[in-house]
Length: 154
Image (cartoon, rainbow, N blue to C red; front, side, top):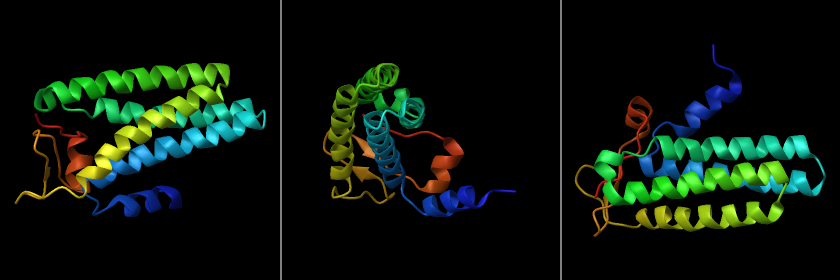
């Protein structure tokens, strides 16, 4: 049986597009990093490290759901960026570095803004968002949860 929190999370993501789900993961990672900064500022190292771990989990999810076959060069670049961000989160957690967390938040915000820009892009008949460079994000919450893949087509 699902806890109330798990039930809320399920209901909160049902019916969202794949793009909206991706944006939720970015928003979550950024929120956890801001929480880590606050915890480190208050000298609560265990709580700060825990928040960094949650942010790391979000970025690992983004990394592991990249479709390298369909995403081509863009997916490979995102993969390298996510690997770098994961490393920076680990270093920030180990050193309680608020400055390093600021840098990671800046990187995540930059990429999130690009995804946000896709929301205003024209839709294709399949419901996917198509951008001139062939970058595609589409689908729905059910297909994302079934395939557990973020498709980035080149």
